[in-house]
Amino acid sequence: MSHMMPNSFLPEFGYATPLDDLRPGPLYEDERPTRRDRPLGEILGLVDLTRLITDGRGEEVRALDEVSLSIRRGEILGLVGPEGGGTTTLLRSLNLLERPTAGEILYEGEVVQDRTGERLATLRRKIGMVFREYNLLSSRRLFDNVALPMRLAGRRAWEIANRVPVLLELVGLGDKRDAFPDQLSCDEKRRLGIARALALQPEILLCEEPTSFLAPDAAHRVLELLKEVNRQTGATIVLTTDDMSVIRAICDRLAVMEAGRIVEEGPVWESFAHPRMPLTRRLLHGLLPELPPFIRARIRPEPEGPSDAILRLKFGGTSAYDPIIAEFAREADAVFSVIHGAIDYIQEQPLGVLFLSLQAKGPEHLRSQIVYLRSRVLDVEVIGYVPRSA
Amino acid sequence: MSPDLLDLLARALWQTFVTVAAAGTLCLLAGFPLAILLTRTDREGFSPRPGLQRFVSGAGAASFLILLVALLPVSHLILGRSIGSWAAIIPLSIAATAYFARLAEAALSQVDRGLIDAGLAMGAGRRQILLQFLLPEALPQIGAGFMVTLGAVAGASLVIQALGAGELALDGQGLSHPAVIAIAAAAAITLLYFLRAPGSRRSRLGQGF
Image 1 (cartoon, rainbow over the protein chains, first blue to last red):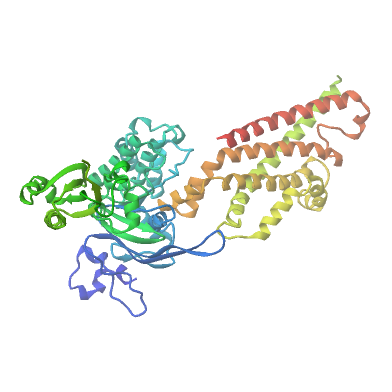
Image 2 (cartoon, chains in turn yellow, purple):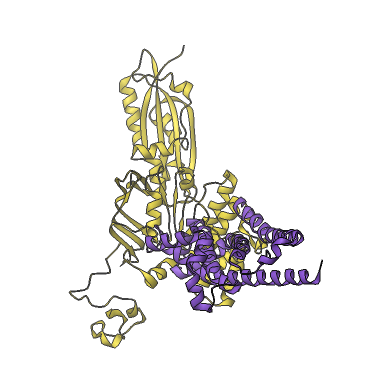
């Protein structure tokens, strides 16, 4: 490989900088391109990644179907979807535990999906993985479980002796270094898995369903720990889950997967405010305020006699702090009552949902009020009409 | 009891001990690599070799007595004799090796596949995964398997008296004395019990985990 030659063989660079060692050499005709231009800040990129697997009946299934995704350095990305949607396969493809049938995986712009041997091991040491089933070594003490990746990578004894206690302390297992994994509870095992995955100071941390098997408060602690790890080390975190509340708790961005495809992708806040796909709405069920069934039962699609309109408003971003409701009453001459609603904070951004029962003087008046609201909030939806009670 | 009889018993016990120890050592030395080879050439292993699999299964399944007779020429070739406890060590070791290798392979294959994933994700190579993940995790089970094998070896070594290897049981001339038979039987049963008991207890523990 040309980039392994001394810099003096590469006069086209003009002068040697330390970076030259990392740059690819000039492209020869018989050499496949190994680098791509990628978006700024991307650490891991997937291009049309496809993985075919043979299922139990011998039929070919697309576990991944032309998935393209750009993972940015330092972010927490959540892969969310129902079981069999492809989130686990995608996660396991990122460190090549599963090989793509077609497509490219780019680590810092470098094509890596065909790597084998020592070059593959080098890549994997930069990517830590936390397994759903823990996959800890039952015959080794906690200290040795965390030390194992460092020993395998040939790290020095003093480095191991210094780093392992720090990691155990970080995940709250500092006093159990001589215990065995079987003596731990589920969330302690998960945290041990996190400590082990961090042993080699990875650039990327892959977490396979980090909250599964955990009680809600333990799940919360694990998520807080991941957030802390992300903040302290700057490691990029990619996690899978089927639970939107996990996404809401720690993710910056999400990718919703179904049948091996990414059907929706973007900042978490946006998907909560404007879920584009039916699957996303289903996953969000229960996380955003919804009208209680006894009210929903009284709602008619069209007004029958004198009726109140039931509106659902979504507001967020800066508009959440504006006195919209007070101004609506004053400026649009509206008479209404708030029947349900809540404001939630997602990645420190407010997202509010409010249900109004609106008394309009007539269809014209209602239309003008809706037009007014649309100019002030993210989304206005007329759910239906409830006959006015006497 | 006459001093002659005690002397006979002591010598027989020593012979049994030597036979079992020698066969056990050989089976440990050969069985471990064979178990690893079997794991690697398994149908789902790195490089499947069904022929080798069948051969080892055959050697393990063949009755020890058949193996003993079939291997007489080999024993003769190696040790210069085809009769006696030293000659018995060869077929005994081969049968024990195949048996132990199967047990050890089963122990290796029962290690959770997830641990291999964990090793790969750390950047471990095949060798590291075998030595640092599979072997330590399977070791309690392999140990239990070895104890079971030793028990079987001791049992088989008692059978060898049929070919006149001398043993805890009898040389032909003792068969007429009921006391000799009783003492020899008691010694054999005691020996086998103590060799087999820890093996079976260990393996039950291992499975219960």
